[in-house]
Length: 165
Image (cartoon, rainbow, N blue to C red; front, side):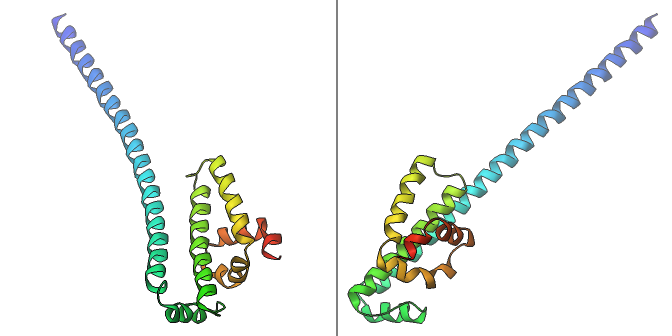
């Protein structure tokens, strides 16, 4: 009887050990999933930050290089196939290029789920106004090749009549 009782305790200890190991494995699975989720979120945040830095740096360098150097801005515009007339109009074109970069960034951010719908609704109105300006309409046919295809499709599907004025 003592021998059966000892064997029975050993079985209980093994069963309890098995349950503890199973519990630890389940907890490990949940922790792994949580870490994977955090890694995906961190990757998205890094991508968004990288794109935002890219837009900021590009626009900042354009302004730094071209703002007080009309001959350099003229070269920049003409070397990329944009119209080039005089310093004032070229600065407007530079502004249009900077704003197009910002519009693309905001569109891609909205598409990735980083903007609420009400914020995006307002920003679409800003794009409508900008794309209605002659400088934006003038720049778009050349500039479109420099943007994400999804942004180009969005602009051309939603603002075709604005661009054709």
